[in-house]
Amino acid sequence: MSVSRTALPVGRGLLYITAAATAWGTAGAAAALLYGRSGLGPMALTFWRSAGGVLLLLAARAVGGTPVRSGPLTRRRLGRFLVNGLGLTLFQAAYFLAVRETGLAVATVVTLGAAPVLVALGARLLMGERLGAAGAVAVTGALTGLAVLVLGDGGSGEVRPVGIGWALASAAGYACITLYTRHLGRGGQAESAYLTTLCSFGICAVCLLPFALSEGLWPAGAELGRTLALLGYLASVPTALAYALYFAGAAVVRAATASVIALIEPVSATVIAVALLGERPTPATLIGAAVLLASVSGLALAEARTAIGVSGARGTARPANS
Image (cartoon, rainbow, N blue to C red; front, side, top):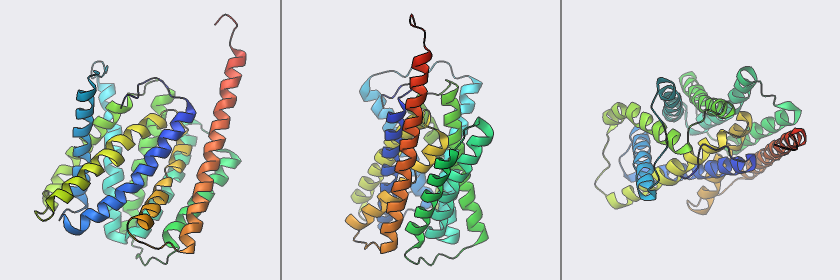
């Protein structure tokens, strides 16, 4: 949580986003274990994830003893936090609604498949970022691998227009977060990863509280210790830590690249399902994971080479007395 507002090297930003996406993949396993016996629904679970993340971030800052140099809370800064917080709320809540309406497989494919496309389009239209031929091939490969990974086992999710709409709304929320964070980073206006994560999840928790109350806010008494342990993990690793890393990395990595690297999430979820939950991967699952990882790796390497080239050009043009 000591990531500052100073720009990170692009290579470290790529590493942060990769670690965040891997951690996000563990959230699904934790949620699967919680849904069975905790009595919590998707809105309540998302609320506790957000609220717990806020508490852990505050505790980490208190234990660290380092004050956050945030300056006055101006309207402009408040607006930045609101954009990220509302985008995060839409991303998480709309995804759970899509799962309810059209099933897990279809909702995941549409959300995670549409997100990099929306990000690439937004980055091109709003920030002038060119994906290039190699990037286009990588995005296509990533989407292909994701589709094979999720649908290759013959999932029977029924496609419903309402669910597709919610999935696209979720993808739009994710694209909003990624594009806006990158925009602020390019303009030197990025807040610290700590403050961005803290405020975003605080806004998310406030927005979701009414829905969580109507669904049932409190967990069941049976196996309460197990439920609290899983909620603690969900709030810490794939939430407080992962999003802090993601916001830091997204400020220095191209928006389209960040969105494709984040597709590692379903791969890590698949590995956990095989190793811990006893699920058997199908050949299609293994092929999809391999294609997805290869595409992500190729795009990350292309981003790193581009960054090195730009850095070298700047170094060559720098005056000798600078």
